[in-house]
Amino acid sequence: MSDYLFPVPEIRSLAVKGEVARYGVQRIFCVGRNYAEHAAEMGYEVDREKPFYFMKSATALEPSGETIPYPPGTDNFHYEMELVVAIGAPAFKADREAAAAAVYGYACGLDMTRRDLQLSERAKQRPWDLGKNFERSAIVGDIVKAGEVGEIGPQRIHLSVNSVTRQDAHLSDLVWKIDEIISHLSGFYHLQPGDLIMTGTPAGVGPVVAGDKITGGIDGLGEIALTIGEAD
Ligand code: MN
View 1 (cartoon, rainbow, N blue to C red):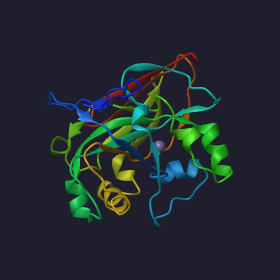
View 2 (view 1 turned 90 degrees about the vertical axis):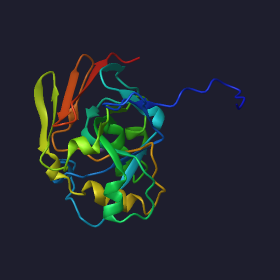
View 3 (view 1 turned 180 degrees about the horizontal axis):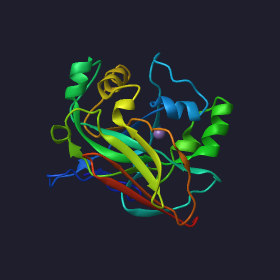
View 4 (view 1 turned 180 degrees about the vertical axis):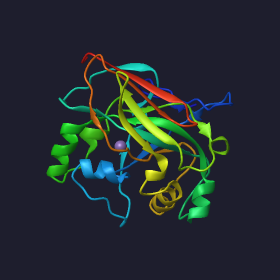
């Protein structure tokens, strides 16, 4: 046992369908511009040169079903509905086959974004952390094991705000496929169990305000929900 000067919070974790034990989370990688129509609405043409990433702290992880306060420093708080991949085996310099074998399971996720801060950082060619990596910004639902999900592609991914559909696409629209992302990322990191990858959002992102209820889903992965509260 180590002695710590200040209380150390418990590691963040996710429930896994059919398991009593939980999936402890260490890192959250996020892929940018991974659906062509979303890249277009953000002012970019998607390219196949290479994927790019940003990160969220594991401490930003938030379970589905909660109410979070409208975050500080923004006037344009956006939802992004995403497929989340949970890594279940070490992957380093993995080819696509090894990358696919490293997937433990999948979950629904919301990459909550302070869009105004992200865009002003982007315009100045600065890092996106203020826009992307902040408290309670990574909402992730229960993990479903890969074997129960089958091939990624035909599943519908969708999101509604106050029961009005805002995002509606299919996982086959992903520009970079799951095995490609893991293979590429594993060239730069020793991926390991506990690593999550948020794989990007389809078109239709938009703002939410206090009182809004977000619900999203991916076929076979259940649903995710988030309520926006007043600013704290
Ligand atoms: Mn995103």
